[in-house]
Image (cartoon, rainbow, N blue to C red; front, side):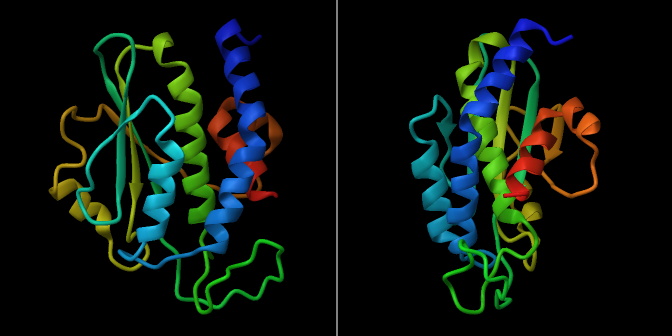
Length: 194
């Protein structure tokens, strides 16, 4: 049986899901390759600005790192999503297919980014319900450049040091019962299915 806070979280997630799907579609239509994700980073920053998270200055040129502080000091959970696309021509015929010739979100990074943005929306509304902090890392250059290592070397995971790091991924084949165990997985299932 869900607790009242879980019920509130589920309600909030359900209410923002259409917006997260729209974000995914926008990102999918505008893919950018490794370390050239300038418009993607700008879109993420602009979209997250109204939330109650602290956007940090970029460590690399195209990353977005933000911190959400809970009501008291405590442990840090870092959530990470990759934001880059691949140099592949999209031939899906989807209504939200890539508008950029020769580039496509073929590995689902548009979905990963949309899920992490959704997590910022939800968690920012519940910041007074938890202690500690959540760091959100939108990593550029995962496919070709392995820029995650550069982010770490530049200090993106310092102050506070993470107690856990969770990467947002997606995939099909999870039963709905399993998805219910992790609401983040449920988001990704619903987002990647639309």
